[in-house]
Image (cartoon, rainbow, N blue to C red; front, side):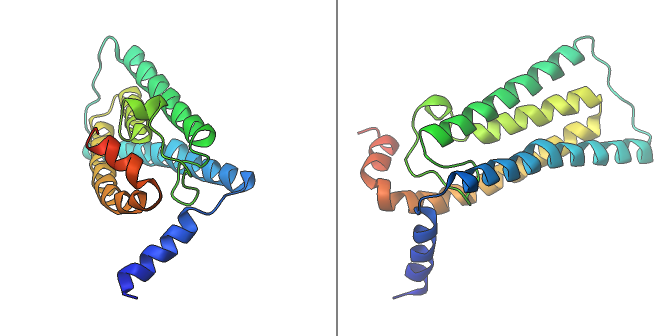
Length: 177
């Protein structure tokens, strides 16, 4: 057995084992703490520090509060819808430690490959506009491209994992058969 086959076997055993409700709730709590609380606080602290240090001006748009409230609301609603879909239909959670047990092609996944990332980015942009800070927008774009890079790596890796239990359905959706 090659090293690749051993690694794939370890991941498939952990990935497709049933998770308890306690593990799912822990995964949602951990994801919420990181993506809904920690990263926005990091964006706010970094932008305030950079703005103060470099004495950067703040932008003022007439409709800034409406735009920020709308982006934050849409982002959080999309995140909640995605988590609910993963729990109810996918029988899993949003983090790789509690992966879904079924392939999800309905709900937000019908419209977007990674609705969790889209919701998070909209949420972060809303916070950036609320801050009236160019550096907050820069840090949001920085996080976005890091998320994008991570998603490409995960797409390549998890696509291989999807081939195992969901191969027929995955290829039928991928190539529209």
